[in-house]
Image (cartoon, rainbow, N blue to C red):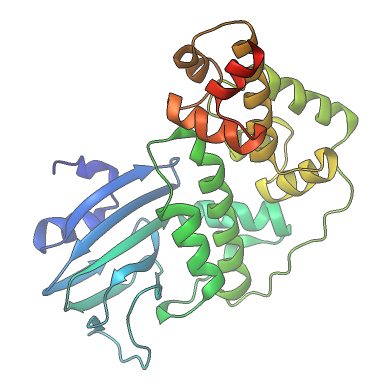
Length: 294
């Protein structure tokens, strides 16, 4: 496989070149967040990253991995987590074959979230490292929110964005020296902002709509926006967007537009993706819906 290594944090570039690790896929979500998936076996890996924090999850195998630069009583294995704050050195002994997911994020982004969500001075935030940690909530967010989603499908970015936000909030709460408590969000969006967001979604439903972008439209953190949106619309942002897309698809089916064109017109990555989501919301595939109209 050939990958553009410039999209990978420097520490991982050197790891990729110096070790047996095979990069399976990688993606930049934005300038602050990147993802990658690796597999490796029988290797010695040294990581020292000055640009990003790295949170990793063992997706398959990994029972015979060990950390050599620091003693730990935890045992490696599937769903175990490692948090490697930047500016530190880590040396790993790799045993039997395993698959690993990496989530990279900048210190700047972490502090931005702390300021926007908790209204706290972020300058003294220091992440605490984790080695082969067991945390079912964090592991589920990593596995099902990020690494078991299809990264090529733009529509999955709603779920990935939300998982990223929840992971970083959880790290701020549980893995820093600071005491962060999530604020209680009362009420919904103002009438002006509710109208703005509604009109924007209905006008741009065929485009990728990230949680970050929608939150910026009304000047809110992603955490506050998601909660205030649900209070205003009685559903999560991604569910609302999918509903708008499906309803527009139904109208276009009634108008006799070919299904392959409808998928593109309504923001679905493919005709099969349209079919899956349409059936989830309408109870029938687009073809059966079309036949019922005849």
